[in-house]
Image (cartoon, rainbow, N blue to C red; front, side, top):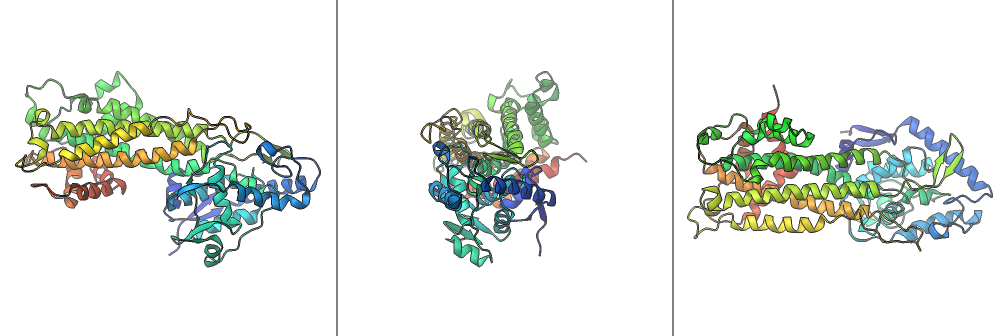
Length: 510
């Protein structure tokens, strides 16, 4: 069965389409207009390479060696040596979804027609995507200065038959992977090596999938919070629209609206209308304010990524229409670095308040429920250590939320004297997102146990949908068992989007 087509033109790629490519769900093709632009920019590079005028990256050295002129007969060796020398990455390879995205994003930048790549080279990169030849790209080694030099060099290695690649998920030498896929490596011509390694595509590859997970987790945080509100017999009044109309931050209003929809139809709220409690703790009462500000940060990052994945980030840039080749700094990763730091801080915020809500549920002096939600507490420890695990994850997330974007280590003998650390920001953001996913899964799991103690009175429809889905995978805990299995099961419901989908299906307006 053939996969749907995705045309890339360097200008219109959407984050959701990137997700499809990460899952190998579509066939990528170059748009016809993009092909014309690519050919025009290559023609200009060929003319410059044939002349005697020095032009950075075409017939000169690189970085601090930019003033060194290279003979025409050595231009192929210049490009090959560039790739070999820059492939200095270390650490674990990027996961296959991120490595696929890296390859896609590089193809999309080349499709803009400002790079001077040959159609043959770009065609091979697109064929690799479609035939599941995925470069082995070590995670570490980029400072985000002239873009992600080391990661992109490892990608480029595969195009010239060096390095390693995954073919259909199996790691092997790249020559073997290309051969199995029916492909042949290329010999790089003038500027092509530099074209392949200048850019922000590695940080964007990690960052885009981080961004999409963060957006999903923001929804799950609201769901988890609503479940806790019902489990603790919390008030719904702090979510009323008039409160948020007088402080109209978009994120805050969106969360309050989301909570009202999830909690709609609650019978539990009617059981404590005349209770003596005046106010709930901040972790319940201030969900719109805290979750809302996190949503604002995540939304900021989306705006940055949507621009960046469709931007020309090479150096130099080739403008065929004016027949000029210009050096600049579009490869600098500062916009992405700052955005990824903001995402990490936003997710840590969601984890932090989630852990406090878990404490509210397991602490009998705060919840009015059995200690640690355990029957025969003392004999059973219940969810005591689930809260400890959440606390550990929050503590590490706070450390990882120290911003990489304000750090800089000069490189390349002082030529690259301010760097972005964009890949560092993206990688630690990815780790924070994994911790946030686990923290929210713990809250959902604990809240389901709290809701068991409120039966037979029913919570809001959205909360009920979440509760029933959890209970379809994880039974009520009536005595101690290995909770890590339960946490893993709920984490899978979060990561797959099943939890969000189950709740949203009950909250959509008719």
